[in-house]
Image (cartoon, rainbow, N blue to C red; front, side, top):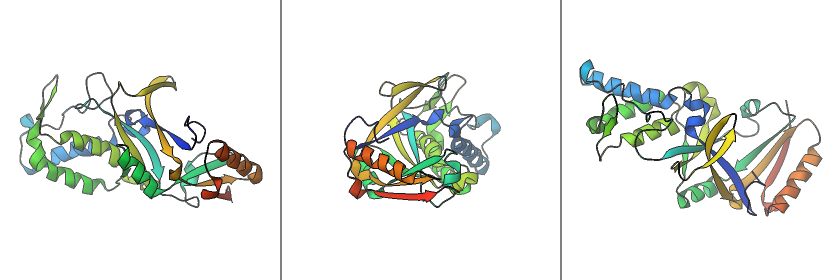
Length: 253
């Protein structure tokens, strides 16, 4: 992240296409809740089965891409958890672990100025489904579908509901993660592509300014001094001011 940005004083972040993430295997969790909300709305309004929209297709034919605008979702997952939290247990089993802390205000400013979004994940699916059901009071009649195509009114907000369901809603069983996400919308023509794990994956590279980097925490069983010395040297080489970045260390448990 420090040396991959290509420009001095920038922190490089690789945003992944959401549909290539574990969250999106099968039907993404958030979309399953949105589908249940459609069913709940129909139940509340006694809409007959032959008129149901519960089976509306969320994806384009033969594409792992939402229907609607030519925009795909790219995310970078973050967490609220500090270096003393259980997050470390899931961060990997390597001999050395490193966590980079970001400055919230600087990150918000960057996102606002660069058409990116900083989203806090929601884990209360019942509350979110209730919001969706209420939104369908105005949106239910703005979308439809047949066997071959989905049809949408020009005034529909159903697209936004699909995007929100994917990007913000997560399984309550994962609430300990306290996940936030940097999110971006990019067309297939604007994305970069890499060959990874046997797949051609679309990505987006962000270059965050040095002001976003707040702290670096290292966990290891030994060699702290060598690890920290190397990190400080790298910071200087890449144009960061080591005096402005907190360097912490703690032993692996």
